[in-house]
Length: 139
Image (tube, rainbow, N blue to C red; front, side):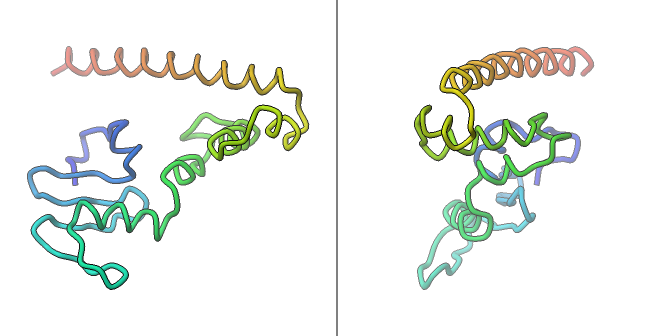
């Protein structure tokens, strides 16, 4: 696993696991299960390598990475329950009209929510860049 002082990156979060390049170990972000490169694991009567079994493990034990990240509390995500419901519906592939009907809101509100999340992404990228520059300056 990465040094505790190192931050979990966006790619790690999207994957649902950390990869420790020095120890050659994959660690599940949701339960800390570990799989080491160089070993063959059994899954569903199949033999699989570490970088494959970590993905299978996450799907089998935890569902989607999206759902697990979305289930984090507001202190971690900054999202209200309504925003989480919107994202879950949007991720599931529902149309704007379907989301509006399910959530009892207008289609224009759905479009506004999508726009609002795009703006939050821009802000998050800027804050991340500033944070990394501050950290580089301190080291």
